[in-house]
Amino acid sequence: MSKLLVTGGAGFIGSNFIRMMLSDSGHEVVNLDTLTYAGNLENLTDIERHPRYQFVRGDIADPVAMEEVFATHKPDVVVHFAAESHVDRSVLDASLFVRTNVTGTQVLLDKSRAHKVVRFVHVSTDEVYGSLGAWGYFTEDTPMQANSPYSASKAGSDLLVRAAVHTHHMDCVITRCSNNYGPYQFPEKLIPLMIANALEGKQLPVYGDGKNVRDWIYVTDHCAGIRAAMERGKAGEVYNFGGNAERENLFVVKEILRLLGKGEEQIHYVKDRPGHDRRYAMDSSKARALLLWEPKHTFEQGLRATVDWYLLQRPWWERVRTGAYQDYYKQQYANRC
Ligand code: NAD
Ligand code: DAU
Image 1: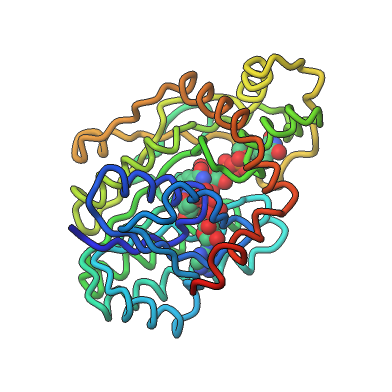
Image 2: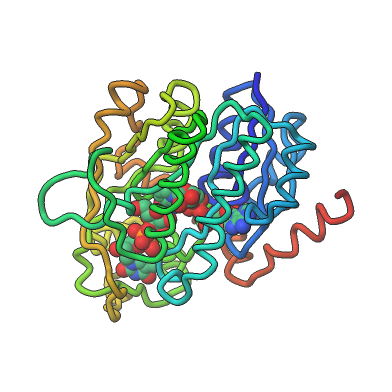
């Protein structure tokens, strides 16, 4: 069994991945997260005392702190989720995106090489490929044409990982996935924002004409893909993961309202996102053929499960919306560290 250093494990996808690793594998997990606004230890309360889990607070862009983390924990594998992940925030200020996504990734690559990490899994995004017209799909060979500061910073990190393989012969794999949804997603992203607003009787802000298309994937299907790439991926390779579920934003919003039994009068068209990518769609045939991976959830199953989760876990997202979740670290961890 291996020791995994999971960066960004207090976020949405990282916390789902850690839960999967603790229940379905014998690996030890060290969760390294600096706890930005998106880092929420309440995503992990059910496993925080698991004997194979520990949490370490640290900033991936701080080389001194990372030296201590790698020297102390001696990970075999790094699974790198930590990032600034919200496109709208990158439009307002790109600086943190460059620091975390670009510099932070290089610091982790340097420490992984120095401490002889056997495999580095870099979790990236379909957004590095840019935007599609009405037809076609992104393959792993599609040129990177990132359009937002967020996706440009992720594309930069992907190139640094590629360079580490080429120059230093590091064993790295890159995964690129489409839009995730499911439990523990921060309610600033489309699906959880719309569910929470609908339940609170607020307006549902749809950007532009609402006809932008995303390829939606249930979060545990993405986590299974990352695991497959970690276990069966080939060094230097890129693997695309998509949900095979292209939907227009307006369709998604209307489905959420229908599942909640709410009326469409809550929909409110607002000014479009600057540089808004029109369509993403993934060709995942490489991952299907070589990693023996496929998504298990249809969009209808996944959305139903997600709406049910947000209905049941209302205290979780209410504490996020009020900011109360940020006290959890002080209450539960600060005295222990
Ligand atoms: P998220 O915003 O929910 O979580 C990011 C986590 O990283 C947070 O816990 C945050 O505290 C942590 N973090 C941020 N800066 C850090 C730093 N300097 N040091 C240590 N930790 C730091 O993000 P997510 O949606 O879970 O996405 C995780 C990864 O997956 C990202 O790399 C993202 O680019 C990628 N991705 C996301 C999606 C999606 O639809 N959400 C799709 C494809 C790829
Ligand atoms: O494609 C993968 C990417 O998906 C990830 O790399 C990113 O980390 C993740 O945030 C996500 O990016 P998007 O910009 O596609 O996700 P977001 O949920 O912000 O928006 C989805 C679509 O919904 C997009 O077309 C913009 C639109 N939107 C979003 C919000 C928040 C609205 O119309 N209204 C909104 O309020």
